[in-house]
Image 1: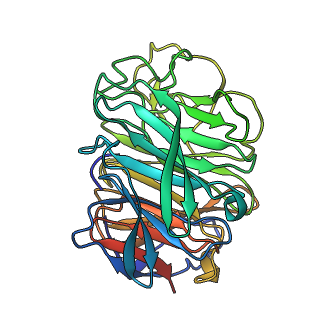
Image 2: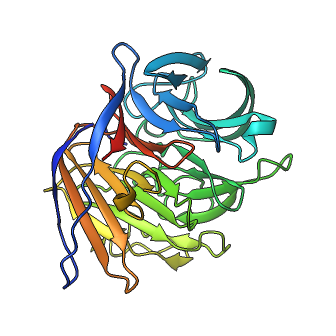
Length: 356
């Protein structure tokens, strides 16, 4: 994550197959203002739950009700916040309706280590239970990753950054002895379970998600100085190690050609864009909501330093349909889904719902 928010009017088609296809249009409706409520960096809902939970980077999770935000849990005494550090995401157990378990990803006081912790909900109030995983992150304060989400396999997936600095200077991304620059899976239903290393070679995966219809994994991985990338893995439930290439590659371009890859199957980006169009990708979701039926199947994403939202949808032949909506709010820090698959965008100024 580099600092991120933006949304608006005309929808422009970037690339289409030979037969012309009309790009679906959509708008953004602000559903909550965040004046005085800090920096929203994530949004999530439990399965089948009407509530929306908004993560404030300073260390607070709030519940959104009818445009009003109330505190769900305050972790400021545990969270090291500022710059790219802070409370960065929340995930709800697939059986949250009965077990009330939720999980958070934050950088901890006093040293900034990546921490995955568990809590319990009682109505609209959450309580801290225990730390499940700590990953040392003390060489720099940037590239903390920041996402937890449950996959179709029922595991808690964790996306970590490469430890910060620039150019993977601490050598974590391709080092399989390090948990930084990785995609990990954790069985939270088995006591004492250790995380499995599923993917390596990530720089700073700022938001990944699973398509709720197909289970496909999508990742927005923040680039170095030239390229931002979108990665896609159609069958993430298989155990084979994936390698996303950093720092051997930045996007599809050579970055450090002499760098040895640390094993696994190389995953090439589905899509890249240069820093002429943005500076820091914000990964999103495949739209499966009810508000804009024509948008279903499009993976939506943004860039923190731009004022557009883009979409990709793969046709049956594998050729992508692309769309772009300009005039979006600047500084989009994250996207999120509600319990019905409708998609929202978070900015420092408010929460926006994607509508017709």
